[in-house]
Image 1 (cartoon, rainbow, N blue to C red):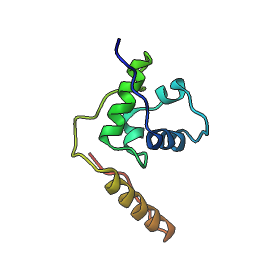
Image 2 (image 1 turned 30 degrees about the vertical axis):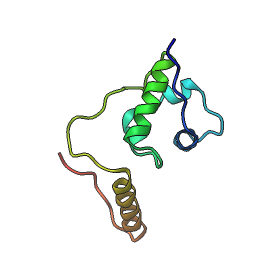
Image 3 (image 1 turned 90 degrees about the vertical axis):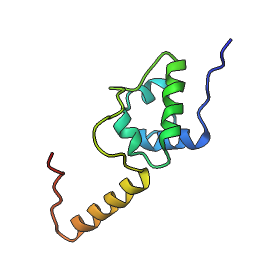
Image 4 (image 1 turned 90 degrees about the horizontal axis):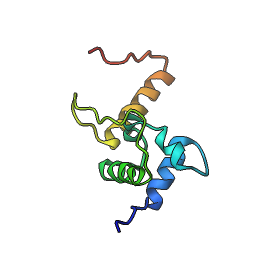
Length: 101
């Protein structure tokens, strides 16, 4: 009989932050999509893979569960640095536009 994976404390805490809830359910986690998890501090590729596997064990999956294939891979640390830089520019009155594709 296969055992269902458990989420680590770090993963649970990161999901609580992503969902802005103290108590989370499987249904809450299933409302998130891959892009949101990538932007969540404390979650890396292994954690996201574990969350996906945990959801699958519960008979659920992420909303729009598609890992983006296009574009370069971006580390969570890089995303946070960019978000802080954008916030800093906006605080100083600059308008930051999204990248043009």
